[in-house]
Image (cartoon, rainbow, N blue to C red):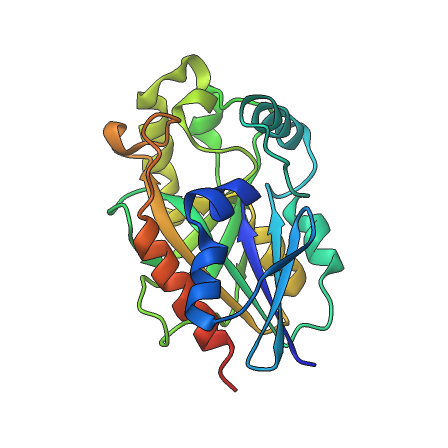
Amino acid sequence: MKKLIVIFGGAVGLYQGYFNIFHEIEKHFKCIIRRNTPFKFSCKIKEKLIEFRFCYGPTRDKNYYNAKKFLETKFKELVPPPADELSKKLKNAEKTLLLGICGAFKGKKGTIHIPKEFKEIFFSDVYIKHKEILKIKPFNKITIDNFLSNKLKGSKSSLVTSNISLVPDNVEDRKKEYLISLAEKLSKQGDIVDKESYQIVKYLKNKSLGIMFMTSDLLSVKKHMMTLEGFSPDKKKFVENTIKAIKIALEK
């Protein structure tokens, strides 16, 4: 049986709870999604096996463990394995989708992105020091043929993967001005930022890959930066484009 793997970047609760994504997929495709393990779900659509997998962060470094402790303590949320570990385990998929939300260096919230170019940045500490901002530069560019291009409406963006969430709480002295400076610097190298995609692309770049992200926060605008109180991505738009991406992936 042919298999499609759908990867969500982030914790299960965000997609199953906030976006209610599995209910919406079941309703649209008239299928039943079953939980196989804490981070693996599956169903059958059009005689194809669909596996839904989750990953969090690029790799198992101290930033991963710091975020894991925070999410498990504050939200009682189980944290999936990092992207590099998951990528190495994915086999025998006809196609793979990576779907998620992202920060943007400029633009508007709710923008759909279909990235084809990927770079990575790594911070040495669990928070971003001001002096690091001055010298940070994305590296190791990878370009892929995103099979959602020209099929799903969205911005053809360049994406940067970071090992730490680019939010005010993770910046030295929690200064939003520092985050704005970082956004200005990184905007010369890319359009959006996430925490998982580079590792997925690195290990699966020779496979059939479709990648879609939606902007949830803007690093260059104080009122649109990601905070626990102000986190409100567009549920309807993300669900609609997730379903469209799955339909495209199921095409012969």
